Length: 343
Image 1 (cartoon, rainbow, N blue to C red):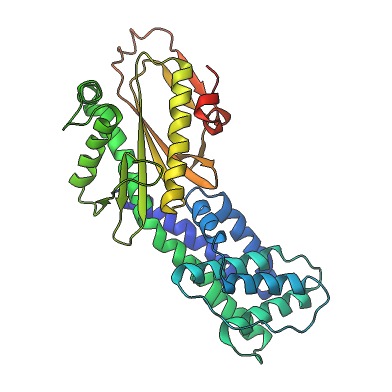
Image 2: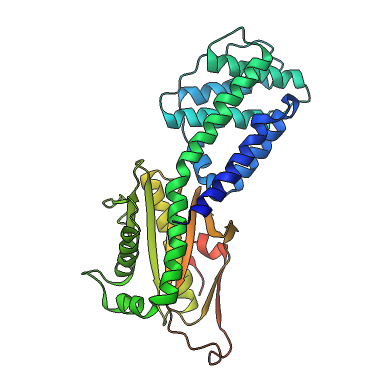
């Protein structure tokens, strides 16, 4: 399951959160800003932040109202009392506090201190809390709380990404002919893409991963919907790129695949999904995707879609291959609706 890959992501997460947890008081706002910027741009955490920002509850609205009032000249305010009702709401409150502190626009350090004191009062119910104690509470509750929430979300997705990487290697090194036959003739009553993804499902079971297959969603049936031990859904869809597919066919199929994954993510309220491309084309496929830590992904509709391309083509040896042909697919091609992609 490539534990080193999971450990590396965790190390980076701890390192980024350690800064606002340990920085001098005067730098707290700036380090919160740096943390939010990193979380927003990281392919793993960006989807989680987007999901938390969509949570609308009394606790989050109270934080926003406090920030809006204190952008003026108000120097006294009733911050209310902490009222998050679930782990997700608590994480949304933690994120909102850090977000507000990170983006609070004032040159007056005392104004920022007063804002943090209001948040300290809100979290503890103590309307006589001291400034330094309030900052400690915000660090202990909001910063640590957001870290713990995101850390809990890493396991299933990082493990699946690691397994997809190993599955790709296994297919390209040992099972090209087998998978071409599966795509053409079917497997266990399935055909085409469904047959190919059944091979992936078999591989995951062989790896002793405790995922459970779920029924179809309102947008149709994803090729593979898994549920981990924590109740989180993992959406995997597949596309079969055939040897006879034109460049336009390839762009349409991939665009359709990315949009399908996003719809399934919406159905299951998940921040990220996965698209596997079984590529039987003899031409080299180049996708203009973003990349971080060795993972290719596309941000689409507020979701993150990871892509794993698996070459199963019957390719000649390098000495006989001749000049390589390439199909280039841009990010705009993938974000465009499948029926609108140009040939």
